[in-house]
Image (cartoon, rainbow, N blue to C red; front, side, top):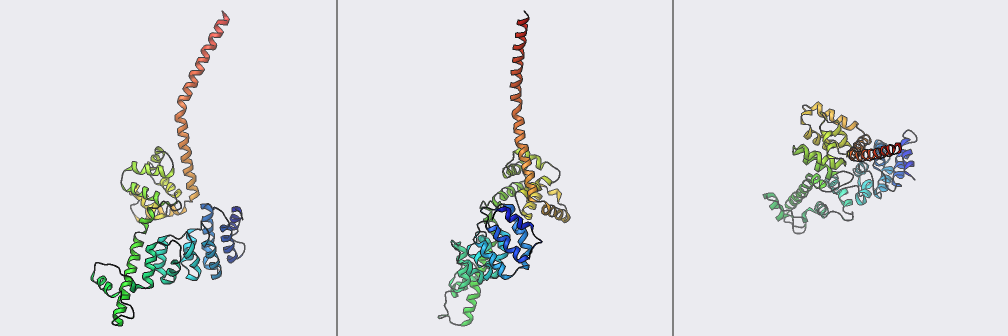
Length: 345
């Protein structure tokens, strides 16, 4: 099935039942060799509104199909991963669209059922594997903590059920060790955004966001304009003209073309235009404008800026060429006038 077939299915929202449409759209998408971002977005726009209207069997079918899909839409995968483990298991075990941070969050929300499925992933992060073992058998895990409670846990935790002196002590060990494991989970989740930012991901643009954020927060306009020029692949003068406007409309389009989330786009914009957000209503207006700005329209604007950059380069190169042509033409004129003069003689 070609990409045009998938697009035709996406258009026929009113024909057929939600059940058939849900399955057909995912089947068509999985047949695409390398789907575009637009097609990924189309699938999400089509299937997510139908999600609550389809049966458990359809959700299970779609989860199994997307688990083998290299470019599965992240939003749909995350939604399926929140389902009971009998539906989510194929994605938890195999899907590349589920990141380590997603796995940690799922373990934190759903506990052992999801954790046991995640433990079957190939190449699982060793830290996540340790945390799953800690949740499975907390009495076998010793976590060093500076406080007195953790020290007591280290003394009690190694006790097995056969050697425990009494039941209350064993229950205390279970509770403290389990809390230690949950603390490690929360710690990893807090640092998740920073870890993700260090990895250049072509779909999330985390590395680009970090550069834009850090340069915007310096307060040095030139630093941010340079980072923006690099991110959009335009020249410095064009990037500077975008920021020179009194409003943030051009910057809004630039950030939308990079597919940044609302909170990331707002952080960068408020760092560059602090006076534009004096009250909560201004923030709400920004978020509304950002949500309504279609990404394809923003990308078209960036293409126009790139075209203007090329046109500027061509114009800058033209004077030298035109001078040489003028000089050449004048030489020809002088030569021809000389020939006419000699002919008259």
